[in-house]
Image (cartoon, rainbow, N blue to C red; front, side, top):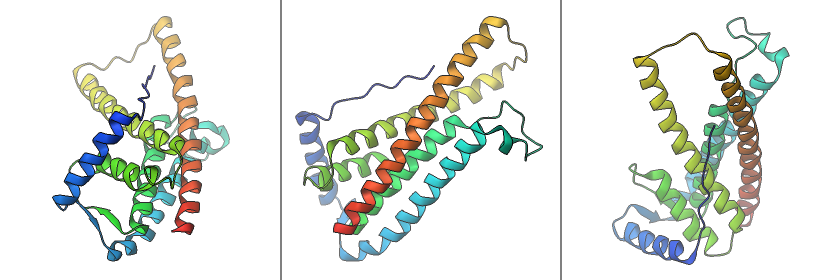
Length: 207
């Protein structure tokens, strides 16, 4: 079963973000230049591709008729964890698109996801260009993606140590509960990404 804890975007956190952005700007890791605006289209294209990839993965996971078209997958094939991850990347690229449209670029490759989130908060939430709902959903998606990456890495380690093809009834029941939870979370993540994408497009039109 997967669990994520949603943190509050309170005044303390906002003050911390303000300080971090000031530091990143002084160090040149965040720049503001009209030349950065040329990157907006690139980010939107990547967001669009990621979002449609998530939609395709969802269709393959939930539609038995689609699965039958591929002889290398069976009825139990699903990609729910990848839907969650790909949906997040759509949001990440759309945040980058908005920043670019405003002439802002996060230059650092180390910690780029967290720095992009903080820049997004600083330039769009604190300036009242985007509602708090979308900031919190973006943050939640980022935390989910990070946790999934850790889970996948741990899963690989577990499989290397032991691969057990047999499951007892209790194990099967636990797996089924987990599968339903993943399916529900994947759909939530996908719908959240769609809404975020559309909202960001509306804001871009106003910039």
